[in-house]
Image 1 (cartoon, rainbow, N blue to C red):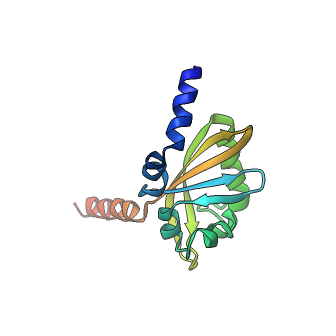
Image 2 (image 1 turned 60 degrees about the vertical axis):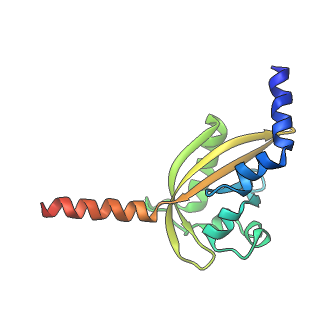
Length: 149
């Protein structure tokens, strides 16, 4: 067990490993502080997905500002986001669909995977977000095609 801990510490200190997992990822990955309800970081894919100028612009925003007031089920985004974070902390991770809002105000559907991370007795949440606009469009097109048959 102690050997695994040393291996993990070595891997995380390795700049190439960090680049591949975080900076080089095509997925939007961000780190949240669930207590302060704010972003600590966002990788380049996050900045691009949300249409922010840079990482500082992204972390200056709140999760609530990157969501519409209500989700598609009618729930307040602020309330529902806290429920999703609570589930991730309770289970270790939680996967769900969410409507996000870009910096320019346009909404988009996404999948979100929240994963609990603990560092020096501090609980953090890693969020991985994927835009599923095209997937939903394709599903709708296929459903329309099937109705014509």
